[in-house]
Image (tube, rainbow, N blue to C red; front, side, top):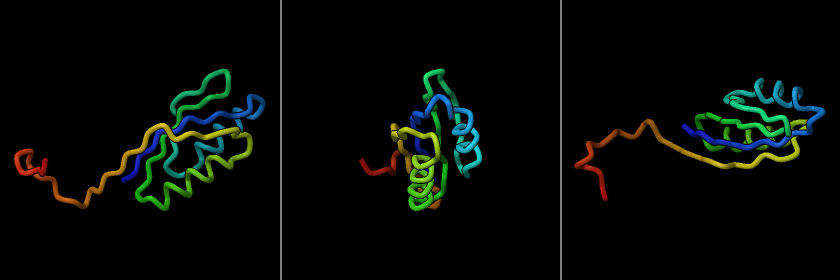
Length: 89
């Protein structure tokens, strides 16, 4: 599973259009929007290819001025968890 935090900066006159477009994308959640056109967005998708495609689509959405990756986390849930004492250091 991949989770990314993105700061999106949108044109003020297209802010609602951008917010609606982003919310319609799979795996996208808009958490906050400022009056200056900034949005805090997360992407949660299963693989690297899906994440790259979503990031490209998000940054190319009409009205988006910029999209900056500020956090990324990738976790493979298929790997068995080891007890703390068995984890390599």
